[in-house]
Length: 292
Image 1 (cartoon, one colour):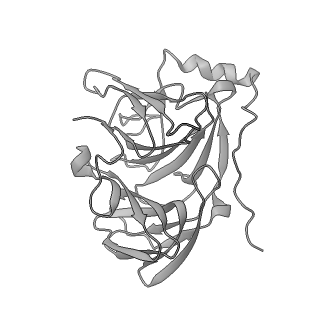
Image 2 (cartoon, helix red, strand yellow):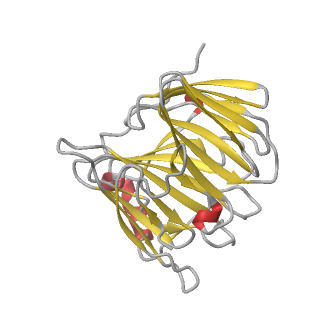
């Protein structure tokens, strides 16, 4: 089974991308990308999973459990932080977009049924991670220590052209002290160039004989890479093309936490960052101020 799913290869019905536990061959993590034309709506059952509705471009109205959330959204993933909506399991939800847009539905099978909630853009911590050519921006909208969910962890990463992110390579495929077991989805959007679509690269390699995932993929906008196990990184943003990816994670570990282990062969790189400045192109943007 290929862990690299090119744009369009998982399209189903209204979804330009659809990855669920059955198609991925795992137990928890899901991702759908919904494309709505102006004035259209889409209803769905959340089933056994919790979901976050995250605008990639455009805005929408989300109705669930008797509540309605107006998501202002954004022009695109490289232009600003967005607000979002959290939807509980065992619910009926409807998404309507007056102006049309593209919306990521990040999901995770879960046990607890938490209330439907609105996540303001002003509450999203924007973090700069790494230094030098390993500099990147992380929008921690649904990080484990930022937003309450039962299983779901999700963040956005922006890597300026020519930089490497998800580096040093790391893993989270074993339940043990200091490491959690998480299935991960990478969803990519690459800024286009004057002559057409942009490209980037993603590497995943085995972390042991029973953790065999091995990927070296050229990725484009709409591509997905599935990471059930293994060392992952770098995510390579080639010169001239800024890279965005959405990380969706969930797993069986008792604690909802992003606990990682660096590949010992490359962990030393972190020690070099103290002597380097962050890339001056970052941040691409910051979260807006809270109203009032």
